[in-house]
Image (cartoon, rainbow, N blue to C red; front, side, top):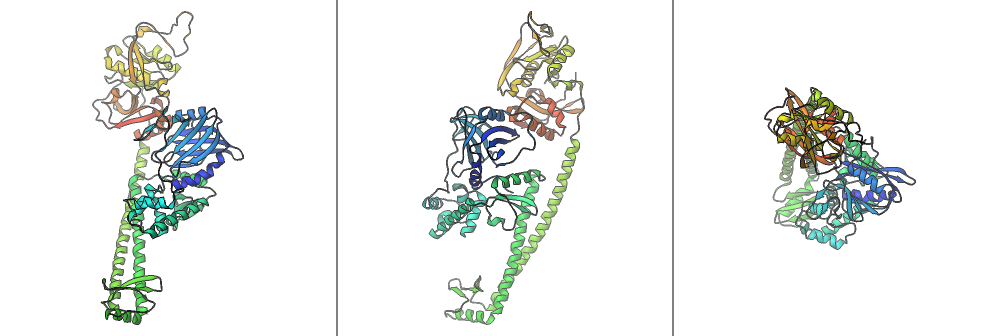
Length: 631
């Protein structure tokens, strides 16, 4: 199944996207790793450009708008609000699309569709927003850096024939690999060029003669002409989508074909069909690929069996002519007649044609009967191969059926596990147990901030708060017995659950104090809103705390719970631990991922994650040492 757009696909899409010129940028949405760009286009209304970096680009409306805006979406909306589209272009023949816009300055949206891909907003040469920060050997994609395009590669659209063939002549790779990589055609199009030109795709490109080189270039120009008048279509095999293409390829000959007015629409239909199709695991996909190879082998063997049988029959149909031909050559004479193609004395063979279509090589040292017997032997071998391929195909089919049943059982089992875990009283607040086993609770909002302090801050406890506005009040139960390690963890928790996370700050500070230092009484002439408290006296600061939290599975009183806490607090208590930091994956997406990972309802994950977008920094499998218990 096709996994992303080729350079040739983008060549066609860019011309279709010229309709955006003169339109104005409206909105941007990010859902997991995809970005949707909405434009208002005069005469066409609103158009939503769906981008899955590294894979797809098409017109496709979002079924649901995300409730919260990610940092990238917010930056695009802020900088490009009502910006006018002035150009849409492909970078050479590479999988890079640029959308140039004008507002108060010149902007360029760069959509990278190779590798992992990216969406980057560039203002007057400098990156102001990007989906993901990346660093390569020859360039860096990060906010504040000048944007540099990937190193240019050969553009076969504009390349003169002499330079085109020079690249082939100088290559050490096969023809198909050279076309795919050095001339940027990609695998399927490189295969198509080889098929149309008639050259051996596995031959070394440097060994092609002038005729072969000319045929390859001619095949490419023929394809390029086809891209100029595309017939976009989605291809299916047995009702399942397998490809989308702007032109008909020879590989599509046996597939069902559904035509579309534009490639943008065809790609949109293909992506939608892929997303709605049942997901298969890599093992099943591997088995299905093996099944396809076995089907091809079975088909080839059966065709060979039929071909050899027909050859034998046609030779016998002209028995006297061919027997005379073999006798003439055997005795040193020069054969004549419409059947003769050539004689190879060194190989002791004569090549004859049958019906001016099929060529067959005969050993002139043998009689016609002996030659035909050899052909029948080959037919038996082809029949044996067909039987073996059929047995292998049957076995693989059974293996796929078993794997599908096992996958269905696993899904059912996983769904059965997604049950709520036991609820504890402290889950009304943000919570975790420190590495020393002390319970730390924090407010979720103004109301629970008040409750944490008024109901639960007692003598012998400790109070922690991040050194930033918009942080939860945290109480360390029996904190007077705790060491510095617990105090540091409580401060890290208070900072991680604050607005510092959604702001994307790398590190910050927090402090802890005694219960008597915390008061609801404001200074004279001041007012404390709900959820806020006055802290008087010396504060015990913890500075330069990195914003990192761990989502982990722990055990509390014999019950499994999922917690989000400082890494140090759970590292010794969990067999499954994922470290996160402020990032660019929207919260809803991460909630769903952790719900699947830990097999719990998403509501439980929703309650424990910090505010705002995140990024997964690492995932570890650890051996639990001991379990915490509620105080």
